Length: 364
Image (cartoon, helix red, strand yellow):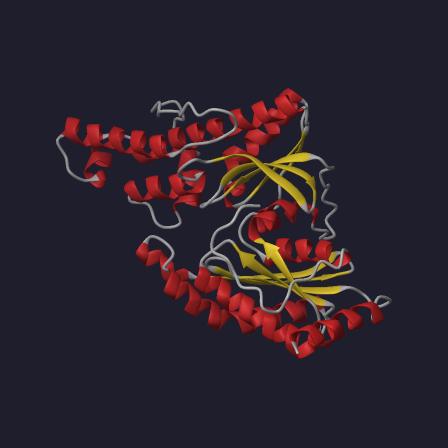
């Protein structure tokens, strides 16, 4: 029945080639439930439901994330359809994030996508979450965004990934450099937690850094070969700096230290942010020079960081790069990027079987 089912599905695809291509996408890789609709290559809606439940724990709790996805997915999809002005009968295919991510969260989105695709007898399209972030640069949202030309380099930075990706085509990507330990986003979040800042820490680092001196604390920078990154040493340097200051001032808590050291949190955040951005950009500059590529993009949650975005502008002007910085709405986990990847795959008739399972870890 499985084979017959898919023969009927593929036949339906070719019978409806003269109709508009309507792709529904589901994103549920971590703690954001999102759904988007693309019609003939143009984004019609992109709805995101965030989960506040994790703030009190200082990080994402997988079980709670899964339960929240179950609560959010139906209303999010319904809102996406209404904003797009389409009905489920118009869908050409369902795209979904298959991985990487939290397995429980992925299972919610995958199961929903499979059930809907079976009920409507339409193809299913699996999308790699990391590729989706890269392909967010190709979303047509009506604002006249410019898109990179192939090949281009993409700095993909988030809470779980720090990579330099050589993008030869939408379906031909190679990781040429990546972190050998921790990600840049994780470094922001962990250091923010040490400073007593709320979760997620990245936006707080960015906010306080604007008020601080980025040269106040010279944190350690790694010496990693090729285009790879490392941020574990930076986190240790940050922690030891605070430890030594606590000891020097004879206090036990960060709050007590902040009372004795003016602008402590602001200067620490500014110095940390400047160090992370410098580490990221130096390797990206080396890769662009070695490969002779001047099309350079940034993607992922950390691409929302104001200092990193400004660094792209500055490096672009200095080294004659054509830079591509995504709108803030496409930096965090969202279904628009999944929908775009799904649209490309639909045009190539690159569908997946109904029995494919999600994966927690993988590369591009």
